[in-house]
Image 1 (spheres, helix red, strand yellow):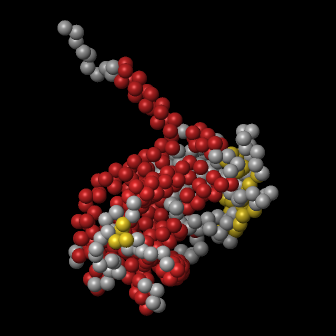
Image 2: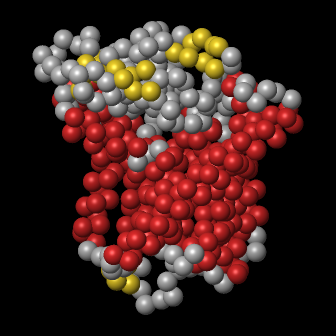
Image 3: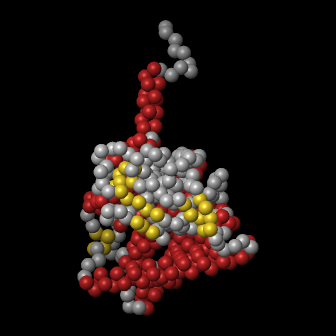
Length: 435
C-alpha cells in the first residue's frame, strides 16, 4: 500500500495557492488602479498615453488644519477645464505615499505647487468626485440628520449605529494591517488629506455599503416602496463610491472589495440583533451611561501609530456623533417625544406636494445651518479650553494633533452635534411650525 508523506502540499494545491496569491497581488497592485484611471480618461501629464489629450488641469491650495477637509482650496483652471490635484513627486514613506516638503510661516504650513494631470471625461470626473464626497463628513452631517428631520428618526438611529460600528472596525483594521495605498506614480492621486492613512480596507466602501443596506433593510418594514428598486439603488450607490476610490487613486481594488465584504458580513451578523439592541438603547436606564463610557473608551484606546494620521480624529468624530445621537434618542423616549410615526407600518411614502417640499427644504437648510454653526462654536471653545489647560498655543498644529488635545476637543464638539440633532432640532421645527 502506497504511503502518504505528511507535511508535503500536493502540487495542485501549491499551484492553486500560487495562482490565488498572484491574483490577490494583482488586485492590490497600483497598475490596476492606474489602468482604471486611464480607462476613465485620467492620467498624469508625464504619461504619454495617446488617449489622454485633454487640456491640462492644476490646483494650488494651502494646507488645511488637522481633522478638517480641504474646503478652503483656491482653484486655478487652465483652458476652462475642471480643477483637480495630484500628489507631489518625492520619496515614498512607509505607507507608499509621498513625503511633502513643507515650510512654515507664522505657524501655518505650506506645500509646493502640485504637478498637473489630464481629465479625459468631465462627466466621469464629476460623477466619481461627487461619489467620493458621499464618504466624507459633509455628507454625513447633512444626509443622516435629513433622514431624521424629514422621514423617520428610527431609520436615522439604525443607520448611525451601524455606521459607527462598521467605521470603527474598519479604521482599526486599517491601522492594524498597515497595508499601503497605491503608489504614485503610476497612480494619479486626487486627494491628499488621507494620504498618510493606510489603505486596507476602504472605509469609504464600508460606510457606503453599511448605510445603503441598513437603510434598505430598515425602511422595508417602515415604508411602502418597491424592494427591487431600493436594492438596485443601494447596489448602485455602493458601487459608485467603491469605484470613486479607484478613480481618485486612494485605494486598490482589493481594498474596496474587502471593505464591501467586511461591511456585508457585519450587517449579516448584526441584523438579527437590531430590534433587541434598539429596545435596550431606548429603554435601559444604563443606555446613556454605557454610550458615553464606551465611546470614550473606544476613542482613547484607539491604536497608536508611529506617525500622525487622520484616522484617530475621524474615528473620534464618528464615535462621538453616534454616542450623542444614542443619548439623545434615549432622552426623547423618556420624554415621550420620539417624533416617529405612530404605527400602521409599512406606511406609504410622504406625498411630494409643494408645501411638503418647501417645509422639508426649510428644515434641511435651517437644521444644517444650526449644526454647522454649533460645530464651529464648539470647536473654537473646546480647543481654547483644552489648549489653555495644557498650556500650548492655540495655533500650534503639531500640538493639536496630540491625543490629549485632538480626542477631547473633537469628542466634545461632535457629541454635542449628536445631542443637538436628536433632542433640540425637531423641537425647534415644531416651534417654527415646520414640523
